Amino acid sequence: MSGDPSDAELARLRLRVAELEAALAREPRHASGEGSLLPETLTAREAKLSEVERAAHLGTWVWDTRSQAVSWSDGLYRILGYDPKRVAPSVDAFYAAVHPEDRARVQETSQRNAETGDTGTLACRIRWETGEIREVVLDGTAIRSPEGRLLGFAGTVLDVTERNAKERALARSEALLGEAQTLAHVGSWVWDLSTGATEWSKELYRIVGLPTDARASRRLWLERVHPDDLARFKLAIDQVVGGADLSSVDVRVVRPDGEIRWIQGTARALHDAEGRRVGYTGIVHDLTERRRLEDQLRQSQKMEAIGRVAAGIAHDFNNVLTVIRGNADILLMENPNEELRQIAEAASRATELTRLLLTLGRKAPLDPREIDLAEEIERSLRIVRRLVSKEVSIEVDVKRPLWSVVADPTQVHQVVSNLVLNANDSMPAGGSLVLRLENVVLDPAYAREHPDARPGEHVLLEVRDTGTGMTEHVRAHALEPFFTTKESGKGTGLGLPTVFGIVRQGGGSLDIESAPGRGTSVRVFLPRAVP
Image (cartoon, rainbow, N blue to C red; front, side, top):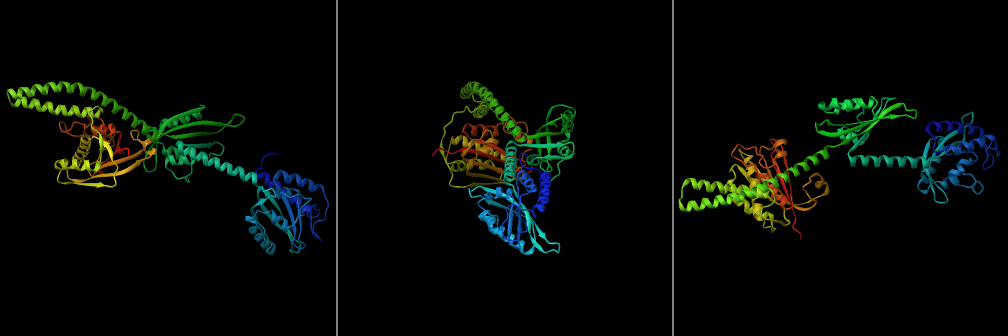
């Protein structure tokens, strides 16, 4: 027999041990003390008992409380690490084998039982003379005369060292698996056809937003699948039930709080040794964050492409505008009239647009220097305040000391102007506008969630308003060139895209938080100047 016995086997072995103990109570091998209940003879029953004990990792003992005679079986000698030729069985010898940290507890329990006749189960450690530690469980029963008088105790010592080690190893493996599932955002499940029982891993409960005490079932899972994806999901399940080895499907699940998560479910059938189908198992991979990052990457790539195209067009268009503006100025000097003046003004406005497009494409000339961002923003606000509605209050919150950044002061002014004026436009009935500056350190986790960001020390410029806010659709497209929600002729759609281009050109990043009726927060992160 190899390995630890099962619970059923242990129950059978313990029953056999109890039978043999009763017989050995009359025929002991190892005994000490005069007038013992157990004469010193070796029987066939004792040999059988030794075989059973070895297989079950058990040892047996008998303690005559009247004479203090003690008997140990061969199995108990093995568990205690004693040599039968050197150590005589006794209560003190047993206590000496108990680990020092557990000894007082075992002695106290044993003495109390000896006085009351109570018995029970007690776990402790045994320390061998070699220093090896064994984990055991003590179990005893009282021996009484026909009249009920207490004669002594008999019992077993079960060595659970290997079993506990395997249980701890299994617990560690399960913990590591749980950690791996959490890191990979992968949950698992098993469906047993014989019992109908379904088991979910902790990560699967997290993915669907349910507490781990919720009873897992196929029905509970189907309730979480998005109604629009339910038919497609059931079709994938039917493929596996119908005999397919593997089936995979991407669907949405809806958490109890209404949050939607994208998942990829994969399932396969389980078979026994004879090839009979006994159940199903599978994994659920939470793709929500990956899809969001992929969307951000696609958006960033699209912005990069649009910026390059726009900058290329702006460069050529600027050359044409230079000719138009130059000739218009010459004609105005020779023959001033309203028509020529309007041509010159239109060329000037077009030149400004081309400058914005060149900034968007990160091809505008720069004059970067180390600056105090708070001071530059204060200079910008002196000009911009005059363009802000009187019903809008402006507050500047600077948490000093503030790190320096490397930036073009003119472009900083453009960033502040665009963000403040956009916020002002979102508050037609008035409101509050806060510009906040502080030092922050972006960690790798933030950078993973925001592809444009880089980990490290930054200065944060946050422009937060109490305006109308943006819908998710508007927020998703807010940085795209020429996208605007303003009436025709009242916006170029280059405000936020220009800010984005300037910030990226300076090695920084930008993100937007907004919701209808809850205002907007634009956060600009500029790298700290190298000390």
